[in-house]
Length: 146
Image (cartoon, rainbow, N blue to C red; front, side):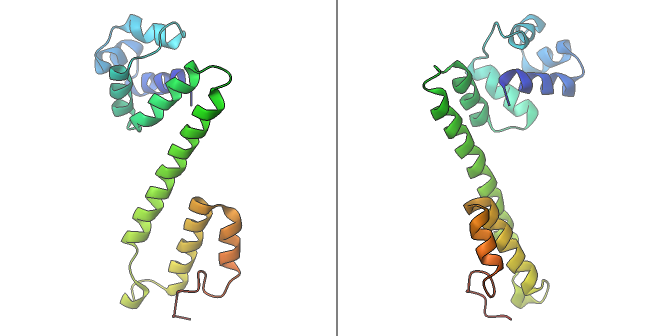
């Protein structure tokens, strides 16, 4: 998502450009300049914008670098942004797995755990590994429950 899109999203959330400016501690003119592309937000404004939207500030920082980068450097910044996104998703999946009850507790079926592991494989390692897990007896072969 482009920085302008983040600002538009924040403007929608605030209800008006003036309210957004007040929430971010800048003038409405500064918001207008960002929206028309004549001002690139600095780090302080990016931090406040990310906080206002509940977004990861690193994603906004990398997006600014991507937008300001030379044509030759853009693919590198884009790849870094994609890695950040993938790492965030993988982190969320690990958090889900850590909170998952043990099949031994009797509160969740072994099949449920198995399919969550497959979902984790699909997100973290790519679809081919997930499909191989689906068609291998008991997923990763570590489950003793049948």
